[in-house]
Length: 303
Image 1 (cartoon, one colour):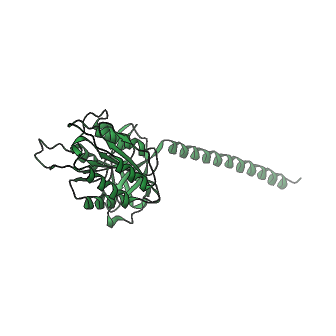
Image 2 (cartoon, one colour):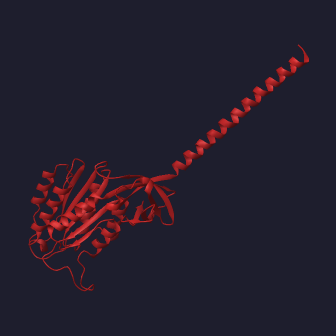
Image 3 (cartoon, rainbow, N blue to C red):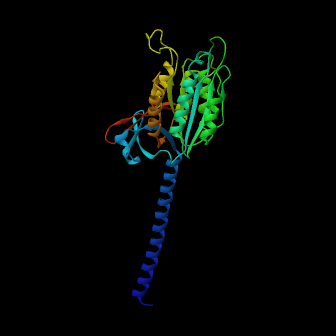
């Protein structure tokens, strides 16, 4: 073999060795990158928040939404609404002794809401708040839910404490077993007494399960008065504001039903990734890229 041939053979061998080594290095880098990405995904967690859009924002997509968690902004991953996702609605009726004269009005409002919100993807849960509260199983059949409403009877006897928060908490736990949008609609006077669930626990339940709360106060007396003596539904009003819901006081049935129905139709479930979440209550806000803040949950509670 000539000297030139030996040199060519030697160079070729070295070239193949270098190519092999380079391939190993590239493969190693690729594996390390994949491992890094996998670790980042494992350390991130997906959560949901409910926001309410208006007529001018109906065309918003996830690319138009920014979620702010305390001092950190993250993009939205998805934005979904009924009928693309299920809608779980619980109507909680105040059936305490003070409501005997207006229970029929409560029922009229509840039935009007069901008739306006019923569709193939909406389930209804009916609950009564009284000295002996009761929560019915969810149903997709509007007629069954309406029959549950009609069967509610009020407490008789003297004025007594009504465990409103216990009934609301039970309804939240019930609808939180199913995915999708979750809505509580309370209809009644609104004063709680004797509940084992505190208001702070009730709020935490709603926040941790992205539940939107509506309250339509119905009473045979005026709900207005000086702040020092007005206590009807004060915490419920705060809860609706904190969860993207609405609050009404002794409004006519048709008007209240239409406003609540329209608001529920505008609810959107927005998912996002929270890097390195910490247990506790985290303040949250939702805005469009145009800088407009949307009515949304004001906080989420992490276990």
